[in-house]
Length: 512
Image 1: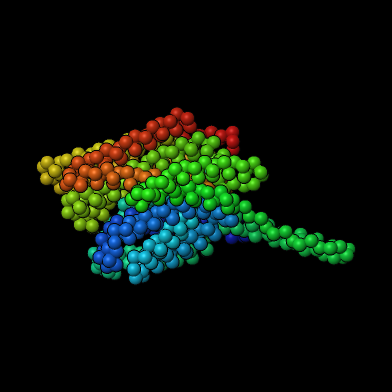
Image 2: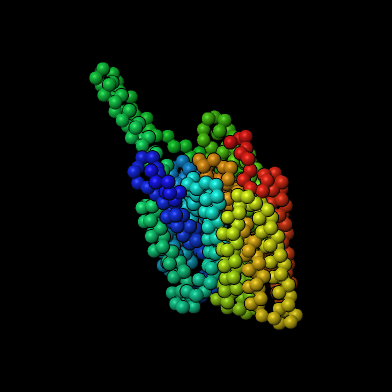
């Protein structure tokens, strides 16, 4: 047998699969999903002109995708763990690709928003399968390197999305340009589905098919024996798949009630927050009761008994609470306050993406020995970059320096973003059993999506509270001050995680 560490041997087939090929297929759709999030800000003005979309329409173009993405993550992660991650990945990517094509062909805002809803569902279906499959097929340092590439792709995609959208719109014009930013996902998505079908091991699916064949053979043998003896043959039992539908509905409704008020501009929607809290309580009670009856809950609450997972999820959620608004505020400040173009606004974040990519790879090689120290240092680096960005904004107002100086401070921020993403992604899932890999990835990603929704609403609210009086620099400084507060909370969580779990992978919890 070949001892090449890149090879995977799966029971039930003589084929040999390569981890490197699997990782390529996993990461490209992740980039597509995140570019779809970050590029839309640049495309909104042209969508408004060409489709005559109202402000409410544009709000839902932004929020609809993020909302359905967020509520799909945990159910899709659970379904992948039970039914097979490869199958859910391919299905989700196909849904995302077709919805992207529909977005690009939409003749009016209503169909565009419906397509964005469906696009978010597709992205939510395949996203947790990526983390689950990395958890399943990589181990130790190799897993850390794989998650480092994951972090690289995340950081680079978020930063490059606006640049790509701005370039496409400038090249093809408004009418074709914004449509092309969506349609470009379609051929890449179909290619990803084709390569996944060729290169994925589909280990869970093969095991389930083998079990069904064995059950059919046993049932056929029992039927023949019973028929020969003249006995009544009972019907063959159907395969039982427990996806905990009640728990799924409760959690989806809870996430919806928590995210929607922050994404819809408030008003009566704020009344959903107390309902969301009650639904979370009801969901926890149901999951405990479901497990006590010997059933498989949607989320085994034992996941939170692993300190590395619960603390890592807390770090991620609070980090996203602040960090995802950094470029939102920059875009608003530069385009509306300084009169910069969409392409200039996108390019200002390019050094951030490049530095983040290198930082992610650097951190990935050191995560297993000093990962939690890296996370603390990365947060301090992001805080420093945010503070320096405020200093640049003040100098722009007082002395008229070029806004391109923001690229330097944002590059420092990128160093922290890349380092934290790679290290925290690896360590937060390190102790989670592989059978729960997709579910755990979905839970962590949901915390990040909720942090993003809450943070964007809160921080842009602070920003607009100042710029309403024309104080663009004050608004920028106040918004970035709020970001620093969120990052300080994440820093406290990271310090606590290091104290509890040590610097590298923690010892397995007794619950495991």
